[in-house]
Amino acid sequence: MSIHENIAAIEKQLQHTHCQLIAVTKTKPVEMLKEAYDAGCKQFGENRVQEMQEKQPLLPSDIQWHLIGHLQTNKVKYIAPFVALIHSVDSLKLLEEIDKQAAKNNRTINCLLQLFIAQEETKFGLSFEEAEELISSGSIESLKHTQIVGLMGMATFTEDQNQIRQEFRSLKQFFEKLKNTSLPANVRMQELSMGMSGDYEIAIEEGSTLIRVGSAIFGSR
Ligand SMILES: *Cc1c(COP(=O)(O)O)cnc(C)c1O
Image (cartoon, rainbow, N blue to C red; front, side, top):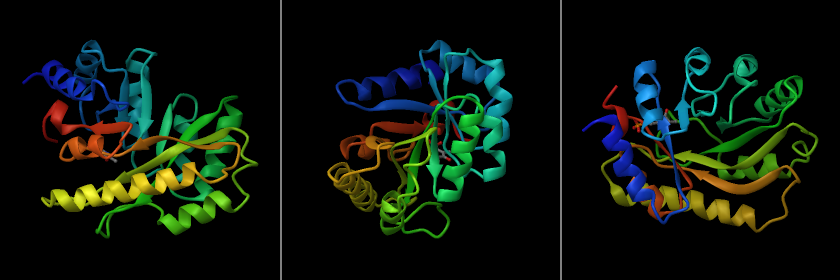
């Protein structure tokens, strides 16, 4: 199947949901991104700062760029002028740097807190307790150029569909719990980024609003 057909098939599954597709374009050449753009895709996800920074000027300016991979504080400045949403925020230190760079660029940067939901050692992210502490610490409200608009999480890489579903469900429950508490003015629970090529169908069923799909569109890496 072509990139065009793959995107059309996923978009069809997203009809009548509140979920949007982010095409994950990491390692893929600009020609393939153009093909996805021509197929109607306007939201692209990259996991490395340098790669995103290189591709962004080569593509149409109405694309929304999502940083989905781990972000080091010293690299925030390279994407601050244009990034649409940073999915991988996991510390106050990083938020403070994002805020500083957003201010320099005279804009507000939207972020998601990345939560650790998998039974794996390798994934980044905050525990539920750490996220609650961060949100209630009083440190976020002073960040005038940063908005936290939701949460992101990655399920365990496993064949066990039930485990994946439980992990997504726990994130959704935490999302709803936060939604019903009093949050700082620049924190709102609007977006829930969960689901990749292998598990996006489960993620949609469990309430995802942003699926991040790479290999199911562009082929394996
Ligand atoms: C690579 C990546 C994806 C997409 O993975 P696929 O399995 O190719 O769909 C989604 N989210 C993150 C954080 C990634 O790094």
